Image 1 (cartoon, rainbow, N blue to C red):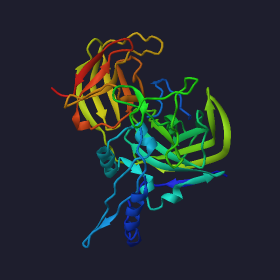
Image 2 (cartoon, helix red, strand yellow; image 1 turned 135 degrees about the horizontal axis):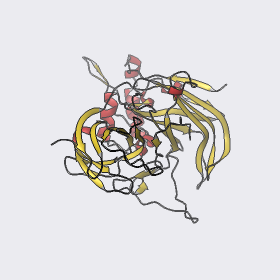
Image 3 (tube, rainbow, N blue to C red; image 1 turned 180 degrees about the horizontal axis):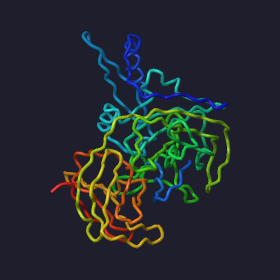
Image 4 (cartoon, rainbow, N blue to C red; image 1 turned 90 degrees about the vertical axis):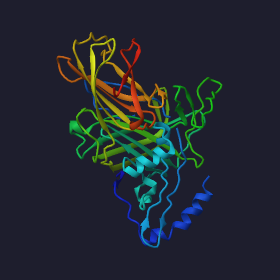
Length: 383
C-alpha cells in the first residue's frame, strides 16, 4: 500500500517546548551554508522549463517577557523560487499573509514526509491564489548521473475526494527543477545569473541537486473552469516510480508511490480592476482583470468574432507588465489558458501564471500581444 499523509494548512501555535529551541535554531543558521490534465475545449499552453532558487532556511522564534511573538524569516524552497522568482521581501509578505506556506517551518514537518524504497519526498513550499496553485516537493535519497534528467513515471493531481469526478481534475504541468531561470530579459541563465554551459554533445548542463544532494519537483496547477477557485481546497498529489527521462521515454530506477493530501491556503491575494479599453488593432475590449502577485485573469468582450486559424484563437494575450517606476517586465507570463465563454464568441478570457512575483499595487500598465503575428500594445490600468 502506498504511504499517504495528511498535510494541513494551520496556524503555528508556539509552546514552551518550541521556545526552548530558539538557541538551537540560531546555531543551525550559523552552520547552514508529467502529469494528468483533464482535456477541455480551451487552449492551454505548456509550462516553461524550470526557473530560480534560494537555499532552505530555518525558523527563528523570539519571545519577550510580556508576550510570545513569532519572528520567522521565511525561505521558499529552491524549486519554488526557481520557478516563481521572488525577492526576500516578497517571500516574507506573501508567507505572512497566508498566500504562501513553507512546510519545513511546521512543528510536525518530519511527519509530512513519505518514504518508499529509500527515497523520501516531502512538501516544501506552496503558493496559491484563486486560479493557480504552485507546489514544490523536496526529494532526498536519489541522484542521477551528470547529463541525465530525473523524473517520475507518473504524477497525478486532483482536488476534492473523488478522482472520478470530472470537476476534480485540474490543468497541470510539472518538472524537476534544473537550476535554470528565465531572467527579466527573457534569457535562460543559471540561478546565480551566470551563463549556461553545454556538454560536448551540445546539451545544456543542468543543476538538479542542491548542496545537500536533494532535488525538487515543481508543479503548477490551474483551474479548468474559469469560475472555479483553489482557495481552501484539498489537493491530492501522487508520484509513481522515479527514474530518468530521455526523449519522452522513462527509464525506471526506483519503484515507489508517494501520495499526499494538501489543504491549500484560503487567502485571496487577487484584485479586480475595471478596464473598459479596446485593444488597439483588434475587435476586443478588455473589460476587466483579476490580478494577483502570481497570476492574472483577463475578461474581454468581442464586437466581431475573429477568424480562428488552427491554434490561433485570435484572442489578445497579456504578456507582461509595466511598473509605475517605468520598469518593464515583458516576459512575465508562463503557462495558462484562453478561450471563448459563449458559442457566439462575443466574450473571451485569458488566464496565465507568472514566472516571478509582482507587486500588484505597482503595476501601471499591461503589455498585450494583439495576436500571434501581431504587435505589442500597452493598456494602462488607470487614466
